[in-house]
Length: 231
Image (tube, rainbow, N blue to C red; front, side, top):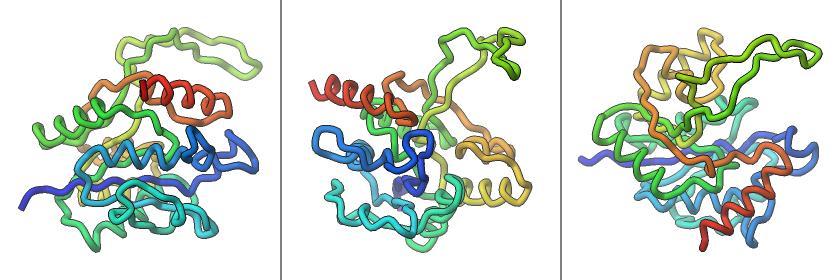
């Protein structure tokens, strides 16, 4: 039986760095919400389904006209991003095979390219490994102390900036997150949980336009990127 591919989209966060009152995933770009663009990109892959982990008081997500709506699943998100991801993995465990591949992707990354998605999935399938999209760090990095004083310049030679999607087999990712949480490790992305339990994770070079909308001006940049990609 061929391995199925599922997507998990944690979308329960408050995004306080973006706005105290507005949720970034529901901002409009080209008459669609950010999260609709994100789901549409992921559906360029042959997904068996996708799970949106949303907050308990979210009364908007389930009304949106997502692409391939028949493949949409919803579960309750958690306090932190990692809790939302784990809730979605627990949900998937009831309907998916433990060896099925799961792509975890930020709701606020609507600009990921089909080429990047394809390369990520192909690498995971060909090498039977866990893989993330990432880009080499380009800029000079400074370590800064309190008072905005530079302490030193940090070498960027081996540094990559992690992106999403990040892909791993369902059971491996679920077990890694559960173990890392039990060990009280700070989990900033799926790879950090996998690294903690000794699972090898490879990087596939992504693109710099796969931005995450974090601050309000990122929304303007995402609009420009989506506009240029549509041409």
